[in-house]
Length: 99
Image (cartoon, one colour):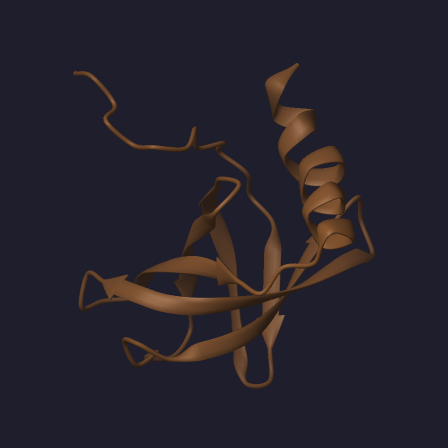
């Protein structure tokens, strides 16, 4: 099966948190992530997330909920990411999976 996605996905298991939301990533790309979450997230809402990597380090990323499977899986598109945050995401989370 051919993957028609615009951006390569990396299978990354990281803890995520945001207020009452806890969960984990399923995969991450440069533009977004798929997550499992412990509560229902409304579609078309912006939510700040903390993605944990390398043990206790965290990266704050704002995301927009774009889809759900009507269960606990969600598609999140990253929004308003600074250049520094993009670099941290690439070198600390995504680049580790390319090797």
